[in-house]
Image (tube, rainbow, N blue to C red; front, side, top):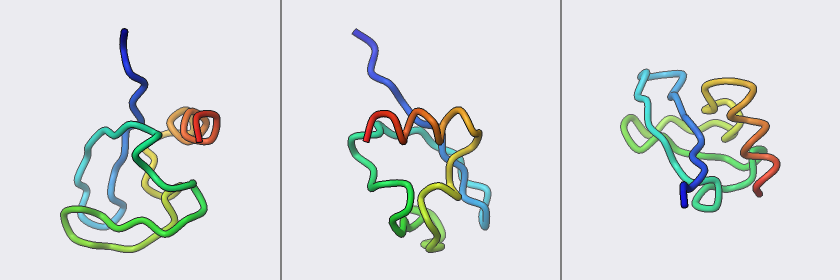
Length: 59
């Protein structure tokens, strides 16, 4: 069974990674980049609209 992953991209440092939606806060909550510690709404870290949609559906 494949687990759904959301692709993330830090808008400040450019770090890219994937995470399970169940391990992430709601899209409107503040999230901190694990690399540079930039703080923004999680929705701003999603790489594409599709990633944001998946995140919202599985929250």
